[in-house]
Length: 120
Image (cartoon, rainbow, N blue to C red; front, side, top):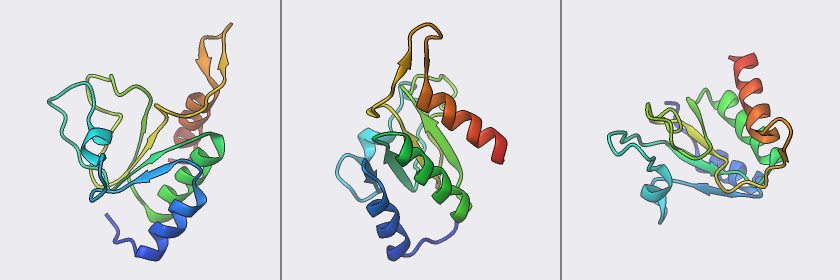
C-alpha cells in the first residue's frame, strides 16, 4: 500500500460528507467487522459514505492513491469481499440511498459497482 501523507488523508476526509474511519479511531474494529467472523481484514481507511457524491470522491481517491477497494453494503458476503486489507472500504451501510422498488435495487450500490468494473 502506498504511504499516504496526513495532508492527503485530511483532504480526503474534508471532501466527504460522511465519516472517514482510520485504524486509530474509536469504532474502527466495529466498522471493519463483517458477519463472517473468520474474516479479519484491516483496511487502511473506511469511508462511511453519506451519498453518491461521497462514493465518487472515495472511488477517485482510491484510484489516485492506487489503493485496493472494497464496497460494503451489509457485510454479509460469506467470502468477506466487503472489506480489504490495507485499502479503502466504501461503506454504504449508513448511506442515504434511493431504492427503485420495481427493480429492487439500490442506485448508489449499482453505480459504484459499475464504476469500479469499468475502471479496473
